[in-house]
Image (cartoon, rainbow, N blue to C red; front, side, top):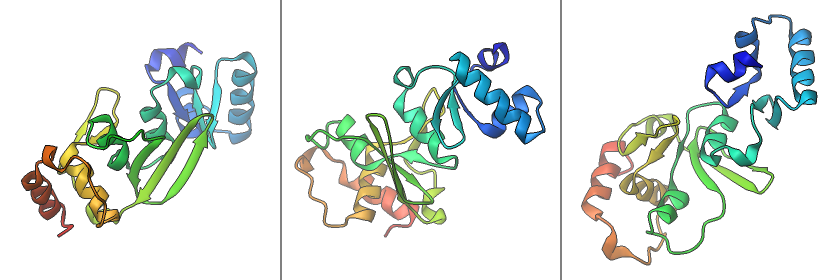
Length: 175
């Protein structure tokens, strides 16, 4: 347990635990994980993902990034709702990733929208926050949302910097 806590991380994939503990035998690894879960030192999150503390104490954005186990960033409705661009309440978290899927963990919903790698990996308008979660800025989130739904209507059109949105769309290659 001390190695888990000393790592400073909260979420671990099965392979992370194998490296951390120096276990190469898969059966031994799974038995060890099971024992830690039984003691309450590890919590199962999602297929091959474990937490060192209860899910309700972990930033849901960090969980959403960890579940997909690949490059992803928070964008679209969730970012725009958090920034007051979309006045409606948005339930769940919308991430951009290579594959589309929706995952529900307890009362949290994570929606992953598929984007071609040439757009997905373009860094324009994306920042990284303190816990390693990549988050689109408002212009990138709008550009992403319009890519997926070109006829989306914004209630607060006046509060949007449309020049910046067009610039991001052009830079990423959406236009």
